[in-house]
Image (cartoon, rainbow, N blue to C red; front, side, top):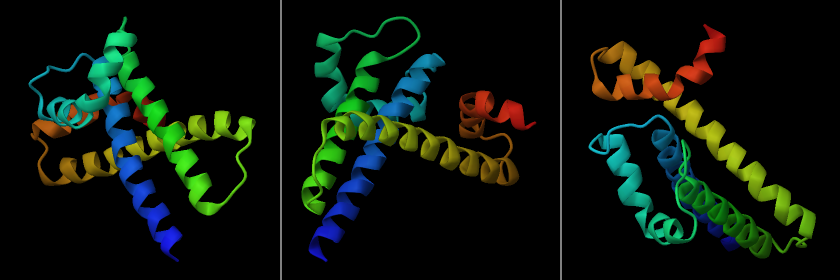
Length: 146
C-alpha cells in the first residue's frame, strides 16, 4: 500500500516535470518570446537541470537539446525508481525502451491536456493570449484532424 502511494506521487511529480521539460523544448522549437508566460513557467521550473546540462550539450538549431536530455534523464530515473519500488526485475532492454516510451507518453499527455485547455479557452475567451500560444503549439497536431 505504501509503495503504491509512493509510486503514484513519484509518477505524478515526474510526469509534471517531464511535460515541463518537453514544453520548454517545444516552445524553443517555435521560437516563442522569452517574456511569454508559458516560456517563463517552463524556464523557471526546469532551469535547475537544463542550465548545467547546457554546459555539456549546447542547444543547436531548432531543438533545445539540454531540455530533451533532461526529460530523458528524468524518464530514466522515474522508470528506475518505479522498478525498484515495485520489486520488478531490471533488464537492460527494458531500461532502454521504457524511458523512451515514457517520453512519448508525456508528449501525448502534453498534447492532450493542451488541446483540452485550448478548447475551453476558445469557448470562454477567444482573444486570450494563452489561447493563441496554445493554438500555435498545437497546430501541427490538429491540422490533420481539421
